[in-house]
Structures are given as C-alpha cells and as structure tokens.
Amino acid sequence: MRAEAQNTVAEIRKSLKLLAQRLDWDTAEHRLEEFDAMSEDPDLWNDPERAQKLMRERQALADAIETYKGISRELDDNIELIELGEAEDDKDVVTEAEAALKALREKAAQKELEALLDGEADANDTFLEINAGAGGTESCDWANMLARMYVRWAEAHGYKVELQAENPGEEAGIKSATYKISGHNAYGWLKSESGVHRLVRISPYDSAARRHTSFSSVWVYPVVDDNIEIEVNPADIRVDTYRSSGAGGQHVNTTDSAVRMTHIPTGIVVTSSEKSQHQNRDIAMKALKSRLYQMELDRRNAEITAQHEAKGEAGWGNQIRSYVLQPYQMVKDLRTGVETSDTAGVLDGDLDQFMAATLALKVAGKSRAEAQAEG
Image (cartoon, rainbow, N blue to C red; front, side, top):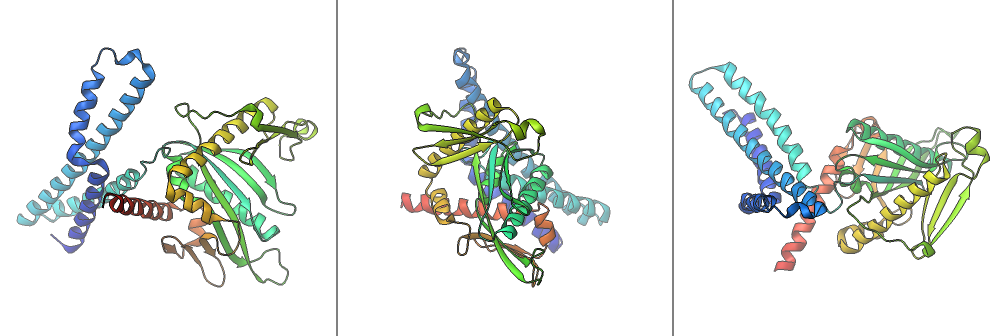
C-alpha cells in the first residue's frame, strides 16, 4: 500500500478510536439491548413524555453504533480491495479504492466532530448576540461584519437564521444584534464563539488611512426547548416598551411595539423589535429563559464559567480571536493556536476549523479533569 493511502487509513483509524471512546464501545451494544427491552414494556407509553425521551436516546445510540460499524466495514473492504488490486496489478481497482478511502476519511472526520457535541444543550437551537465594543464607528462596522460572517456560516450549514433585534450604529454598522439560529446542534457548534473578537485593518472611515484596532463581543446561549423547565417569577421582571428604529414601515416607527425585558435579580436585559408587541413579549420571554438556563449551565460547568468570566469587556486582553487584514492577512484563534491566511474565506463564514479545534480542546480538558478526579 502506498504511503499516502497508509496515512489515510491511519487518520480513519484515529477517528474510529475517538468515536469508540465517546460511544463507550465496550458497553454500547449491551446498552442498546437494555433500551430494546425497555421499549417492549407494554406500560411504557402510559408516560408519553418518558417514552419519547427513551426512544430518542435509543435511536441516537443505535445510529452511533451503526455509524461506527459502517465506517469500520468500509475501511476493511477498501484495504482488502487495495491489497487485491496490488496482488493482481490492477491499477484501476487500487485507484478506485484509494479514492473511496479519501471520501471515507472525510466522513469519519465529520462523525468525529459530531461526537464531540454531547453536552446537555448542544443539540438545541441557539441565540447569538453581537455587541460592538471599544472603537466607536469602526467597532460598529466590525460588529456588522461579524453578523454577516455568522449568518453566512449558518446558511452554509443549512440552519434557519432569524434576526430578533438590532440596534444600528450612529454612522455605520450596528451597535448590537441578536439572532436566533435554528437547526440540529446549532448551539453545540456556535458555543465556542462566545468571547471578544479583535479586528486590525486600515479604517475606511479614516481619511488618513491609518491602521485601527476594533473589538466586538459575541455571546451564544441555547434556546430552551419544551423539555427544559425554567420558572420566572413575574415580580422579578420589568417590561418596557419603546419605538423601534428598525425597518418595518410606519407602524413600527409610530407605536411602542418593541419590548425591553429586564430580569431584576440578575440584571439580564433582552429585547425584541418585531411589529407585534405581543409577539415581542413572547420572544423576549423565551430569550430571557434561555439566558437564565445558560447561567445554570455555567454554574454546573467550570470550563464554561471560566470562559465567560474571562471574556470581560470588549477590549484589549480579552479577545479569543484576532482578525488581521493589515499589514498582513491572518486570522488566529488565541485559545487553540489555529490560524489561516484566508481572511476573506473566514469573514465569508468558513469557521469550521476554529470551532472543531475549540471543541476538541474542551473535550481534552474535560477528560483530564475527570482523570484527575478519579485519581
């Protein structure tokens, strides 16, 4: 087998090893048998909510087992084909099998990444909030560039994107914006983007064409689904209405339809500026519950808590990623060290390499913490 094909096989086996670890392969099939036994209990559907949860868990486990087995089978089959082709000096068979291995490597790598998304709320939809930081007009423009970047990323991955609220900048860009991004694992992928993002470029707003540094912060928190109960005391909420300054016609600009909801005990503020005040109240309440749920996740997860505490204000010393457009082209993640010179691609939504590296880093840190606890 040629060296290139050997490297491809090694990468696939590495992905399979990680999948086996995340799946706890030694007990996986036994757990599936237990799920099957529980699903055959005639009294199971007396509690529909419990039954649906059990069936979802069973299907997820069954899918993961089949994925692992399928990749293993394809790997063995293609190795066998290469060996057969080499023995019979059939170059077409070898070439076809090597191409199949390359495709399998991509599939295995994708499944490896998906296996990292096993957090409590990773599968949920998500809210993504962007706020301009230090830098005035320049930072407002940078916040707008970030919003475009995330919308492009989400649309490229088949997610639904809805603008929940937007506060335009005085001269350009946006002071803030909140999006709801819907689709499987939306929160799991985007949660690693929370933090301060730093831009260095020649400012288009500076007549002297000087280089400027701008900051904007990103905050990602999961949409609370129907299976997660968050109680909010009405006495703890202050609701203010105001006139929306966004697009929407005369009605939006002449009635107090927009809603600002403040959770007094925590100081959390959420807004929504759709046309209907009733709709805005509903959207704001959902966003508030999601923020409160995120706080609970933070409390129980030391890594996430440390990340949010370290985020600080949008300024020097708090950034997670730098985007340098002048005097050279580079985007570098300061947590993982991953970097690229394809700044245009990143700003157009090519973020997977950064997200994957951060997810892998968190999993490695979690594994070390668990090992230390057991020791």
